[in-house]
Length: 432
Image (cartoon, rainbow, N blue to C red; front, side, top):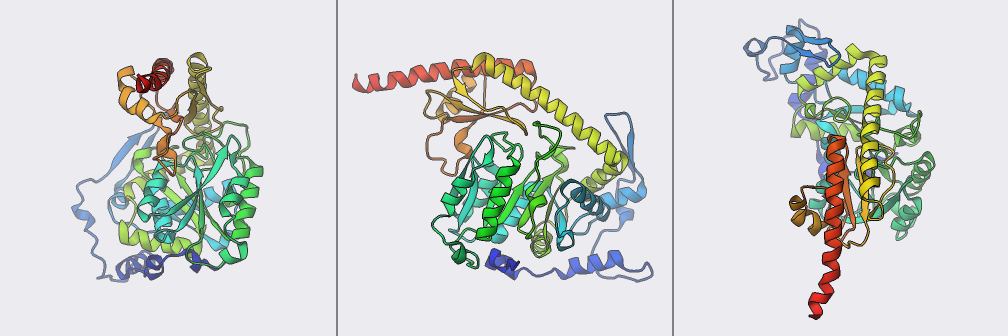
């Protein structure tokens, strides 16, 4: 593929940083070469010498002086080398993408920073942009300052709707769009697993059909998949877009935030080498490198666990969050039946509720929710046009207890009832 059409003028102008190139060279050079180049601090000045972390299973993760020096020093822009190798092996194991030799990885500060770099690499002001709707608010916040023309692609309980994607692309002829660099969609943004906010896991059939449309229109698929391990619909996972990617048109965004610890801020992006190279240049200019201590901790933890330990941990996570989801559904069935509509989340951390008889949840939640001792996220925040009324709201079941869920949804039912009565009285007040 020719990736030049996907890059905006800023991305095309990015060049390697000389200091970063010399630093990378230094990492590979023989030990007897004297480098008087990079201005890294002398490790003898670091105040922390070693440390240990107690794991929940009772084991200890030890950072000896050598490892601690790596934690506290600048690192290569692409990522801590041992971690990069572990991520390559993990990605191949989970996704087995075709043409692996043409792909590369870069460690990012959470998957959010990877999304930002990728979108800012491709967007021009006013570009038409294909986004799954409802859409993750963090992605909308990245794109909105570029004033794109959002082309919402609707989703249902089976994932992104191919018919909606075709309708969004209908103004363009596939042949015209394939080589154009401006005024046409370049990428499709989607969260196919445990979608935030709907909790939907897209089916394999949907993913294959969406990928075929991306091939027809020469689109990059931005596969944002932080909830990959939180799938609740069976023993086998649906194939990722990366696994289906025969052409090299998928940029995949993974994260340890939902699997290990959100505060470590470690994610990674997998994709075609030309695009990952541009992400590396952006990252080098923006943050130099992802926090070394976070990367070393993740790497040491993965080494301590091994493949079997990681499998056991992610299995535990699925069991834990399924129990949380079921507690949320029990409370919803108890208090919201006939008041709201919903589908059972097949992944992720959220229940997406449509409120019956209420035209818009924004005012109800933000002005009167606290009075009823409950707060959820209004659905408007996940829509490309947040000025329009929205009947939806998002409830998270990740970190509240079953007792809190029961109380919260009981309070929500009362809030909805009062809102419904309030809206019925508005026409009478106007005529009065």
